[in-house]
Image 1 (cartoon, rainbow, N blue to C red):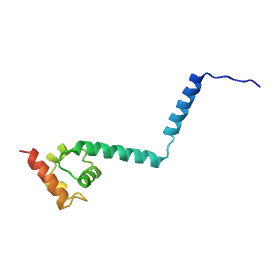
Image 2 (spheres, rainbow, N blue to C red):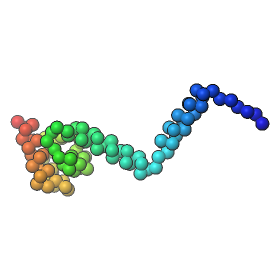
Image 3 (cartoon, rainbow, N blue to C red):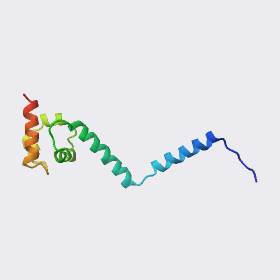
Image 4 (cartoon, rainbow, N blue to C red):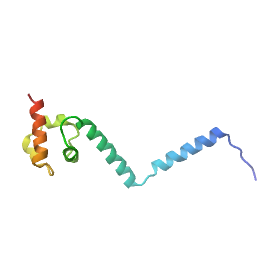
Length: 102
């Protein structure tokens, strides 16, 4: 039997490689959860300070609207037909458009 001695640096590199492999092998559910968290952070970041509630931001994100500037060029009819856009969300969007379409 041959005994192999490894340096601490080599052992640390192997440990980091194993951690990367474990991270890459996460379940599909974990990857989806990470993507949802990333989308939420991005959406809240782009809509932050623009007068939108969290609920309105979530509804817009669900419909593929990730920047508030897109709301300026969308027809109001299209916005009002989005599932989840009620009176309150529509009022927030209309107020944003009024402020920025000058």
